[in-house]
Image (cartoon, rainbow, N blue to C red; front, side):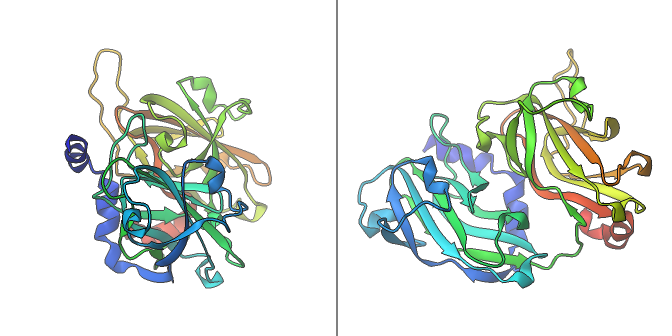
Length: 336
């Protein structure tokens, strides 16, 4: 009971914002119905090529105790497959997973998407939180099957994907990113200002999905500093426009470098004598890129220094990518 009260007190602002706008969403794929189901906890169950043909079937939504698994507490996995129309390839898409008791971790086509609550040994329930997760379009196959796999941990009482209008939803996109930078980034805990250099060798760094909280990628107890790096090639036809880097929302503070030059910061880092920080949590990051820094048809490097004071951290929510200054000026009301 104590952990559930704690969860109510610290529900992230992101969930409230997404749920409050849910009336703007249109259901595109209804995921209610029979899913494949297996108790246990093997990571390979997230693999889209895994053969789950001998698994049980279970209705989603609905708790598993009432579907043949009475008294079971612990880990279980759900899997289902779906198709999605190619007309949605440039839409803003979301997974509505409803209410899950207690903790979930979601994978689409093998890519980690998001999750709520904390798994053991630092268990924290999210049984009373509705899940609505942004889906990077790059995770989806718009011309064939997609695999959705959900790991669930139940600590006590009823468990599973227990209620909600489960499905894939679209939202009319008021603006379009010209260059999507979501997906795999390099990541390293710690703080070293040499890490902003474009020629720094980061091959030994960890790989992490962006956007997403770093706790859900194996860094459960990480508070303090960490860095992200992303290398990409800018097409020649984009070189003459003026670009803005959209870096999503970050918990808590960030400093951003483009090809080794600092282009912006949100929040105020703590110094050694003052533990107070001016946080930028919940604020969408937008940074203008000087045209002189852009390298057409060559590798460009974004380096992001992040400080998280407590709790969950990282580049936790998108969009992440480049948008032209002309588009931003036309659509800037949507960025606030």
